[in-house]
Length: 274
Image (tube, rainbow, N blue to C red; front, top):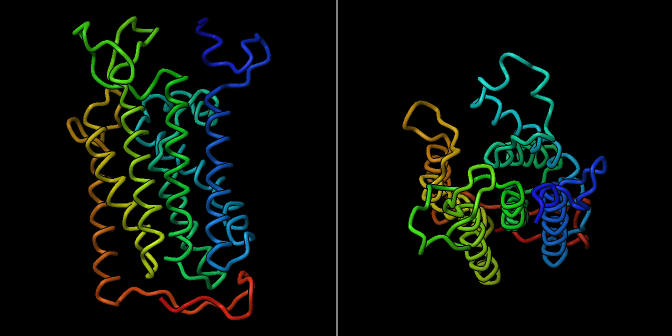
């Protein structure tokens, strides 16, 4: 297949609709639909998710870009306008996660909606978006791992052929997508059994933190804080710690959602105090 067609939806010069953007867009739409469905099933209007997403998505994109630029500053220091050339790539998932969580905190403060409840609606959907979005890395031939020199291991999904390098590398984008899918299934199973708010958030923070920490060690394009210290691995450890702290708070009863009887309820009865 022609390399241009891999990146371009129609393979037509001058009519560039990138596969990466299409895949990310599909992931976002499905993520919103899943969150809205789960919120409605729990007794809340879909407007809750739509209103939140209206702010969360653009803020997450901006934060994902800022995160990437900070740790790749040498690429932009001589030409600051390149910072705004987002079509050339350069979004960091963790930056988006941080932006999304920050938006949730502010949104829930303003709307007086229980934060853990909204986070539990959002986290599985965020993970679903990541599962799908990682395939955009396949189309862009990025986020790959170490060089594979053994011909017996030069096959997908263990490896992926990188055209620019004419080499086989570990398909770390696929490893993460597959591991996230397993975690997503686990979250959906647990969601049907647990009653207290916050456990979906715990599963995401701890589960994805572990997955990203392990896979990041295989990647060749990591962002580094200092030589030898990958930013994503450090942040993964922080998220795991936060997740364990939330788990302790839930089990000890220190973290619990208050009763909500606001406009986002489908009925006037409000939600349960969990």
